[in-house]
Length: 361
Image (cartoon, rainbow, N blue to C red; front, side):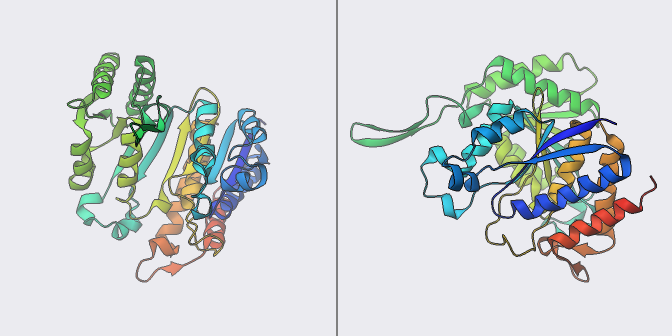
């Protein structure tokens, strides 16, 4: 039976707590299937800085490169906000993305029927939402040069450069079209082509790639309109592909359609090793209290099974187990509902594991 090497990077804040529950899921899947998961833990983010003086030690990067997949918790927190920009915890995350060549971030936004009341929007607006945001992850202002803060004529000037090559756009567009083919065959490309020349090129190249996918319906939309439409009529969307910066903002906006970031997994894909992490942050205000929602991290493991290991059956079972626990009325504090049974981080993980174990082998 094939084995898989997984780099486990718990990170900061609630990261270790939620990753611990995801590792439980890996354990029970290994028991049921005989698949071997070879787990190796490493440091990244603020904890890595405290020990090594860098948010991404060389040994962590090498561990990630040598693995079949990376499971990440979260990085950052107020403790490290005063550090120089170059060594803040978030630089470790960006370093992993760059070092692993992770150019495509997939963020599914699914409204669970049993959590529909948790959404701040009306039930008839969010019911049945199942969309995927495909965010380009290695270009735009996050990596463009020149960048930085400098002095000119006695004044400080901050500079970031929004830049994409044709090849980078073509690569992410192909990923999005391939994904749309497996879903409802609808792709929306989001840009600001009426103002930004970079995204004028984006629109042109996405249109060119679309000619190779005649069965996929391609639309274009300006980012400000898309932000509005995500609230007004989110059910119209299937797959959305967009730039690094726009994707960062729109995916967080879309996450609140579900009522909680604690429910949303993500996958960052590249040429080889992919990275899986919850869409939320390190939540330092609740770290160590045992109340964090581990379901986004557990669902990220389901994405790992699907995208890195080609084990769709196991992915489906993990997602089904999560739905069962929610249907039975169990909730963590962030998705509290009237009449629900409120449980902590570890108990929620145990409930998912129990449902998994009950499935026929």
